[in-house]
Length: 316
Ligand SMILES: [Zn+2]
Ligand SMILES: [Zn+2]
Image (cartoon, rainbow, N blue to C red; front, side, top):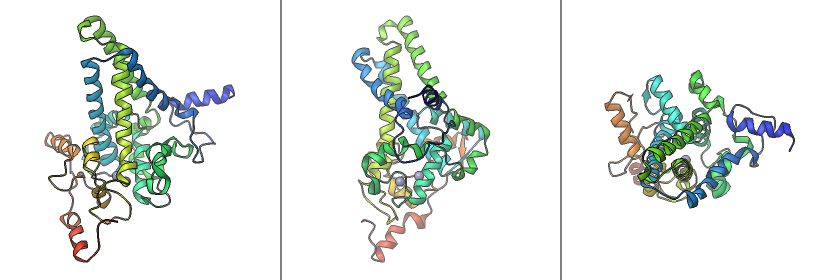
């Protein structure tokens, strides 16, 4: 690898806008995904750092907080405009979403809109039916052709310069989170040694382990929620409702419901379909932070009953 190529690779780790002419093809861009691999490798560090209540608590809290930012904001707000909020809150939750290390809000929303437009048909970027588990779970976003933000699909978001800025420099957010965790660990080691933590342990648990679990939990919606579960609605894709995935992802496992009506703020369509993100959004609405949560029209929600009466089965 020439010095020029090394410099380009390093620049692309921190500057998502640093596209190159060879950003094409379905092959995995190995130099570019080294940070993704390193975070996985970092989890092994737990063998040396050990465990403490405070470090595990940080990992768990950061998992749920960032999962909420992804499900409620990257997905339901930025991708589907399922509710409204202020420009300041929009940016705040975009920052929180970026801390989940799933690239910027425009990148995420654009690729997700592409998924809905072509779900499980040619053109879908992560269909397990068409391209298998590995590609639908991780392979698609590691490949060269999917690094650039498809700005044509998100003109409504691209008109905000602060969101475009964050979309380009999204790596700064997890970098800041990493520094904050290391600094917290260092302070606790000196001021409260009885807690048994330190900078490396906070890094391994708070960032590496929390992020890796968060990643793969999120990715299951693309891979497993199009394969395993039940189909209430006869959508044109293979989406499934899966209660286990719904618990793991704060409500996203009601994926067949979601493909039936993506515009809704809720994905659990009935009271027994637990959708923690929706409950949290209702709490934010009560505080006036978000509003206009889009409901599921009754005719849509009950459409499977009409289909059953007409002899069309919801499963396939
Ligand atoms: Zn889907
Ligand atoms: Zn969606």
